[in-house]
Image (cartoon, rainbow, N blue to C red; front, side, top):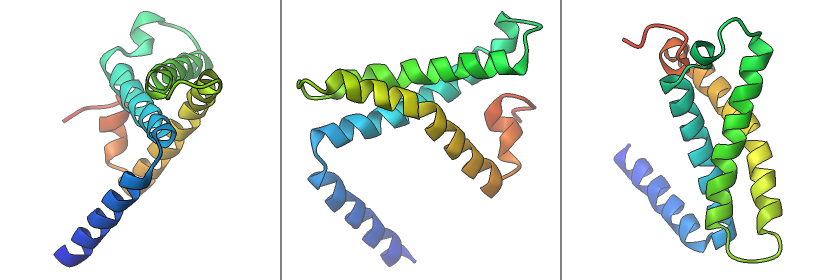
Length: 124
């Protein structure tokens, strides 16, 4: 078992060493955007700041937060070229879907985590 984990870890390190800076910027933008969205959603629930709004309104706010949280690190980490702003916008627009897909996977794999992660239930 430990040999398999070590082999996977070494393969991931070898792959990461070959990744260009643009790839790192995109990967970090998605990861930071998803993590920051989750943290902000959990720490500052939208329902508290905008009581009585529809669930579509809440979803729109969360998507906007995900866009901003992915756009900024991608733009900051992208090497200077004429495409950096375009790539940052693309990653920003992709982040809400990435976040939703990752959440769907986690909740399907571990259903008990949904209430604890999403901020909709008891965190104990």
